[in-house]
Image (cartoon, rainbow, N blue to C red; front, side, top):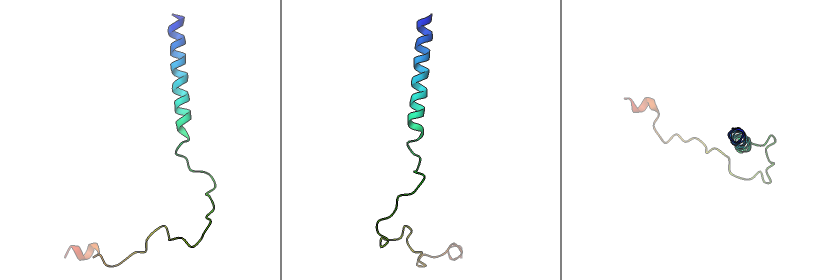
Length: 59
């Protein structure tokens, strides 16, 4: 009987360890890294008016 309890405790401990280990893998750092050059391209491309708007599509 004590062997089953020991096995259950080890399995529970392994489960808790896996959850703890993977819990912080996707979290972003608190302070964003500094950029070395400010001359890089912007993160979002500029909006263009070449595509028709939704109002023009419904005519």
